[in-house]
Amino acid sequence: MDEKAKKRLEKFLRYVKIDTQSNEESNTSPSAEKEYDLLNLLKEELLALGLKDAAIDEYGRLYAHLDGEEGWERIGLNSHVDTASEASGKNVNPLIHENYDGKDIVLPNGLVTSVADFPRLKNYVGDTIVTTDGTTLLGGDDKAGLAIIMNALEELIEEGVPHHPVSILFTPDEEIGRGPEHFNNERFGAEYAYTIDGADPDLIEYENFNAAHAEVRIEGLAIHPGEAKGKLINALTLLEKLDLSLGVARRPEMTEGYEGFFHLIAVKGDSASCEARYLIREHDQAKFEAMKQELLDHARELNAIYPKAKIDVHIKEDYRNMKEILGKDPRAIEHAKKAFAAANIPMRVDPIRGGTDGATFSFLGCPTPNLGTGSYNHHGEREYLSLRDFEAMIELVKKVLTVR
Ligand SMILES: [Zn+2]
Image 1 (cartoon, helix red, strand yellow):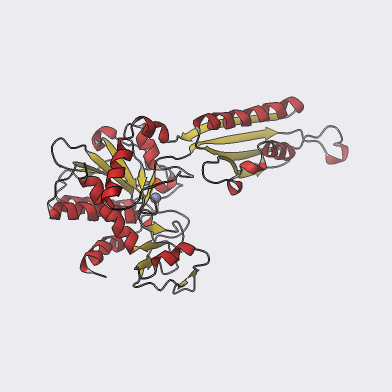
Image 2 (cartoon, rainbow, N blue to C red):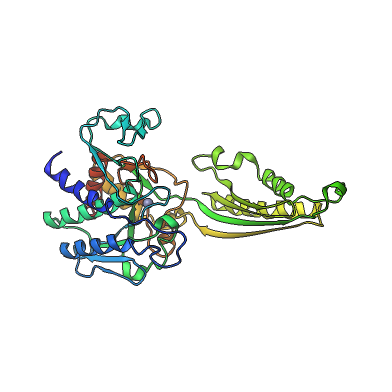
């Protein structure tokens, strides 16, 4: 590993050792006090780089600005400091595998990241791979994003090359869906921005799901089963009927690419009454509206067949496909194309089968596609970072900030 790579990686290794797991149970902003441990460190580093206004607002959002060439568009960069709840982020002990041999990676506690399960590992023969020790997540999601941004800023400033004015936003609580809360677009001040929170360095994402969730409440008619014939209405049976009416082909495990789904995520109750929760996801706005209507229609039809039962459906929208915004204002995509070309990376577009904070930023006035990080297998102990991809992302972000 050369000195430059070592220096770049050092930031990432430093950030991942700070426990910043967000807390779904909490109502405060940020959700966990410990997220400040990294926010404060980043603030100090930004100040040291000369971003004199670096400051954390009352909700734990870190904003900073860097002047650039006059007349050049102000470009925003965003990442999140928190890590996911699926695996511990405490005492992260990153392991560096230099000159990776392309074979299964056996971690000290016996956990195996196998090439059979993760065939893309074969791409990294000769590369430096950073893994966990098998007991925690790595936190590349999204500390790789933070380290990419911090390295790119530092190098641009050191090199003294002309660059765009830059706006930085580091948020807590992305993993619990609260990253874009309290977003202050005026304070951010970017014409458009990029979230550095994806995986592959050749990927730009600006299409995400339209998302809603539905709360279903069913009251049946409880009668002693011995005398139930022709009278009892089992709430669980009605839920089953409602679920089947949505179509088994439109479940997450049956869909991919641009295909939407209904995802039954929780059920509680008994034969007298029950509640269920669905996620509704679809890229296409018209299809999304139709799916929501369909669920309401099926519930109504079922109620008509069983007038003595009660079936209530409440649907609430969660987020929308940012393509709606990027379609009208494609400057961020056009600019990214130039940066990818300058970095010599063929740009690939892929729909996100989920959401991204950039979608909310886009609807709040700052079009924000998502770029990669070079880290993979997020949210688990098998997470790893490719140094080659991570460095490619630093170069790409530098191009984003310097091409016109
Ligand atoms: Zn993330």
